[in-house]
View 1 (tube, rainbow, N blue to C red):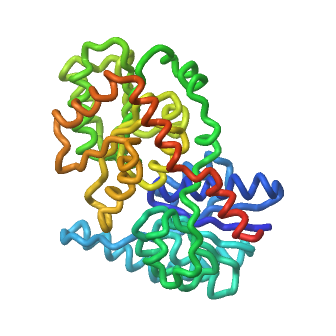
View 2: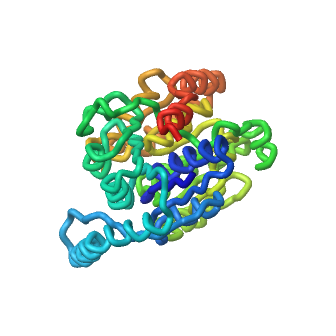
Length: 367
């Protein structure tokens, strides 16, 4: 059996693909699985580190704002689109897959569409409540459309094709052990805070974490792990140095954490954006969270993702327009001063997770 999974752009698209690949490999150890994505994107490292084959295809999106740099990027995008079908055909001809599945990102478009036109079995997975443009367009051509929520199916060309399953998470998330993770990280007995703004980073989240780092400056019982993202360029560490709080016993800064499951497992409080996969992982692990939805997404979908947890009192939701030193520190204090509340929120978070998600996908792929 040969399977292609197309995923790119962000970890929120790539990790669901990896979760499906893990399930297929578990049920069919002899399955030949290959991912398709951009070699310059984070998918290349995540996929190859997981041990899967990777085939490069360059597909990018259009920039909507007007600037000389964006005009240049859009010309490159046009060039990529003109060559994408030929690149997709080459991959399909050489690999000869039995199934092609797209889990998001621009790269899903050409390979899934060309496979569908050839009569190869095809499927999509949409992680958000508001479906992305690529999946909306592809939904009329594919055999199966898996969606995280009932609302997402309404955006598809044929809602009757949609199967509501939730969001799959990797096995390393489902099997993560809090006590073991705390011991491995050397943080037993401490209140562990983990914060991140997405794989590329988020300036507003980084700024809020500067406020929190200052707020907790004199506390010896807190260890804060913060992921600044690719675009921080050393600004966060510079802030810590300038304020004399760059102490690895209190705060540890990383650009990205490839073993983030361990840090999530160890964390007592997680502060992050509201990507659909992140919400699923928080729910699966049963973690109390302070959620800061990005306003720079289609249909404000991160806000609605976050409300899944805030509506059941499993998270504190702070919209970015309300994010400041007071709101972030007050929200943190509410949790820090009440360990039982942290536990209760974590238990409520677990009720939002569908543990059969990846099984539902596998069963309906009919491999």
